[in-house]
Length: 354
Image (cartoon, rainbow, N blue to C red; front, side, top):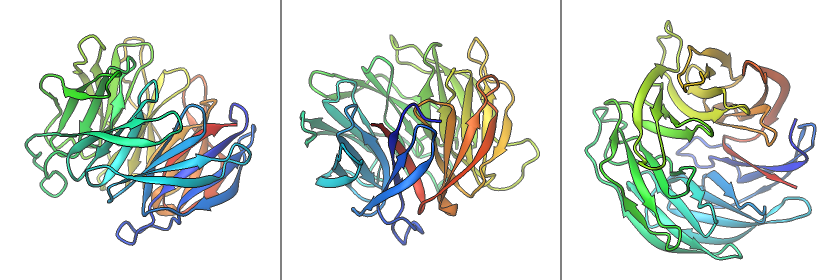
């Protein structure tokens, strides 16, 4: 189910380097009952791998993996089709994630390969102007093949909108950035919070009612719980647990994180084990031992709940599928509901209400 009809936009890999089978941003009509129907595919620059839309549902932005671009698209208010309107240079390399500020006057981008964060000022009609490129610093982690210096994988505003936490896969740290909503300027706030050596911090989320932050460590396949309050913006480690079964000996990396509708379960996708690990969250924010659900495909790079937050959509990058799972509202248990959406090398899903 979704909360009313909406449009789903699916980012993807298109390049040979990435083994991409995508052809652009795929557009799907999604009914109130959750059925997906293809509408169009919008060609654009290579690897439109992460997407975000504004609150009004009029403009969609994409970053392009391995490149240095942010693209903007006008959303047709009738059928959700996209028209590309502009491309902007980030001033960095391999843009992997982007986020809008609470007032949508600024767009922030993580540049993975150049170890930097870019800020764009945004006009009311969705145009962008680059205003800052902040270069991160730090010593590479111990896994030299994967950690070659600062490699920010995400820019995540905290609930106040005044701070951004940046998981840095390359240096095993969480950078704390202050954000001035009036000017859009970023400043470094104190020393970074260290992760375990070789952890490879990737993606995070904030609990909506507890002073807690949950972080996916990609390289160590762990989920780390932190105490977090906005007054200090200082994550403090409370618990770290594996996202894999104890008897699993194969190769796997953790990828995406999602929170259940009632905020009582955290879900993490495993690429290699090809599963979603589901952790119940106690009233104090602690994580209980996980259960595991096969994703029905290979390399689940991304997942996101639908608008009503009862259906979890898992993007299996190597299988060219998105698999839908119903989430039990009491236990968080995931059950495939039979819907499998075919789309080339999916890497991100963005839902826009209609």
